[in-house]
Amino acid sequence: MAKLSGLPIVPAFVLLALVVAAAFAPLVAPHDPQHQDLLARLAPPFVGVSYLFGTDELGRDIFANVLYGLRVSLLVGFVAVAISVLIGTPIGLLAGYRSGSWFENITMRLADVQLSLPTILIALAVLAAFGRGLEKVILVVGVVGWAQYARLVRASVLSERTKDYVAAANGIGASTNRVLARHILPNILGPVLVQIAVDIPRAIELEATLSFLGLGVAITTPSLGIRIAQGYQYLFSGAWWLAVMPGVALVVLVLSINLIGDWLRDALDPITQSAIRARGGAPRFARIARTLGIARTSPRPVE
Image 1 (cartoon, rainbow, N blue to C red):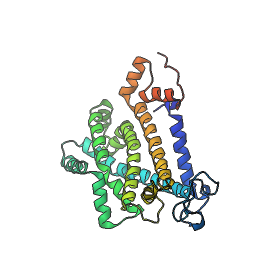
Image 2 (spheres, rainbow, N blue to C red; image 1 turned 30 degrees about the vertical axis):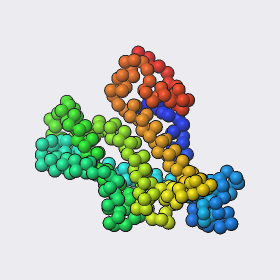
Image 3 (spheres, one colour; image 1 turned 90 degrees about the horizontal axis):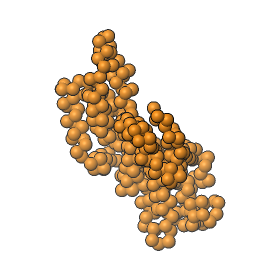
Image 4 (cartoon, helix red, strand yellow; image 1 turned 90 degrees about the vertical axis):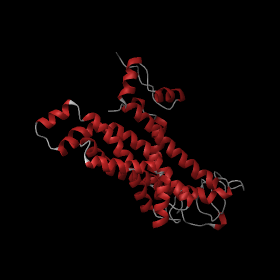
């Protein structure tokens, strides 16, 4: 398991704060995100405590919209990736364990077709045909991501199935399901977890892009992409905060998850860990993080 000694403290704390703030948005937000106060329209940010991030052209609180928009982004990111994992992992397990079968040939060719098509084009086509909505965005983003997990898990199973513990399990008469679930799956979770950490920011960015283009969540749903789309026309007319504040929140959220994913990759990669122990050093990200002062300094391992 990954040791927490190299965990980037600042990104982890920022991500935790964003998750807590989004989860308790009704308690944290000072106003309803759809409440209009025309007397306070286009109020600048950081002037008063009533509207911390300012207001838009209809007097709606930007801070409240950012908090509720983070809820949508996190919901899409985690639920959509969970759908991809639940679809792709079983397919990859069976395809790798039954290498050469008709099931592997069909599923891997479908995965090739899926991976050859840009995700954004598939999502745009589906949502343009069936309409926008939060549930539809989650379902589309989740379904189009199954192929990479199927290919990743299949490659890992092909490597694991030739090892002695798999032969021993087969030798005592263990069923295929038991071998896959109890023996092989726990040993291939490392690459899957790293892929999850990479895909969550991608899903968040995809939802924001679809909402920015007008084919994501409903217009009445607070979304960072919608807020950026509605505010960018005011970017150079003085009311810069309408697009900048949601944009900064999106960047901070994605960046914090990416930095934690970078640490997770270094911590779970056996090749990286072997190189670290050989030179008595720290992972690449840990060295950079300590230089920037955003991670705890871990003691040099004792040989």
